[in-house]
Length: 191
Image (cartoon, rainbow, N blue to C red; front, top):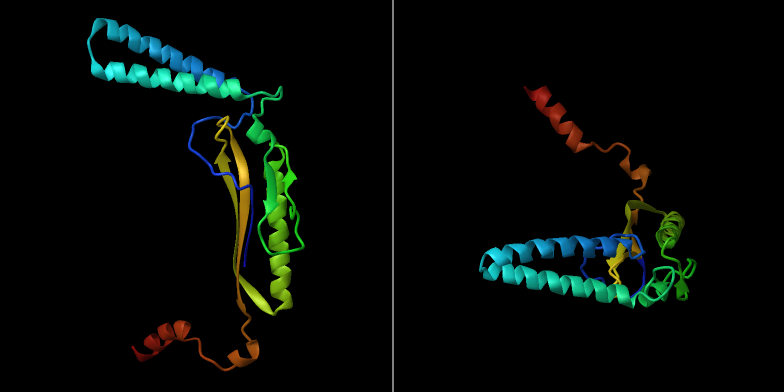
């Protein structure tokens, strides 16, 4: 049985810090501007197409970062996408949280998702016990994503995986020979 919780947002790729403030982006812009000035100085002393491409790429990256910073509208540094992000359970387990879409702050999203996934772990263990099964494997994955609007990373959901099998009845194991352990003994005896 597998249970997931998620937001429905598709992650994109970017290199921003986890800090929801724009400080990380401002530092990145300053670093890129210094790199851009270095290339422009090199360009004055040589005629290189490679430098022209590097300068053009840096100008595009700086413009992209400035555009993203302009989109951040709220005072707390969250963009509209992050501010409106909601979490909802996607499993068929009726006894866990987040059955209806719920707003969770960015700071508490990870602990909320971890707590929710722990509910699945506990309920799956109880179900296995009720059904007379044993748990073979159980894991929890916490998923992250990158906001397409502001570039900040966020917890996008989680997934609990539980694998069970029927318990082996100990009564039927009486008198059976464990062939894996016995093979070494038989070899020793025959030598």
